[in-house]
Length: 120
Image 1: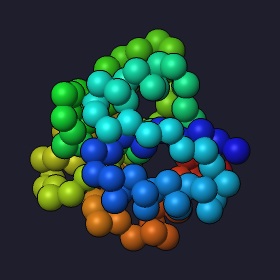
Image 2: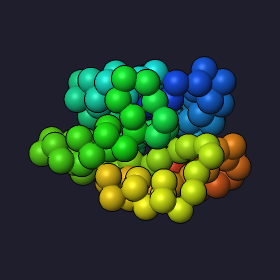
Image 3: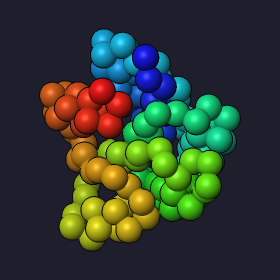
Image 4: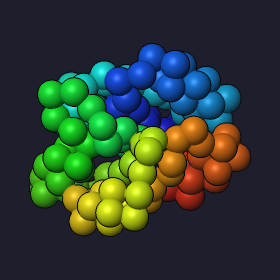
């Protein structure tokens, strides 16, 4: 069982992602702000991070950059999951350190395939 950190400020998306992860046999940890996501990543060292880009306190681009530049956490794959994106958002996410990008609303099978790719 892998531990996956969901950093998402929308409660409905938390519920949907949590349900998907449980059905796949993974454990979910939840953060509602970018700062909380950084703190939980440091405390739990998850196997994967699902990261909204538009977050309160610290946005997802900043969170990804901080995590990827951390010696203890930089190896953790990050999947940006965001709505209303354009090519510049995707490029910025990749430059910040995101390993993959999924647009919301996401297709369940696409999310499942992405999770399986990173944590099996």
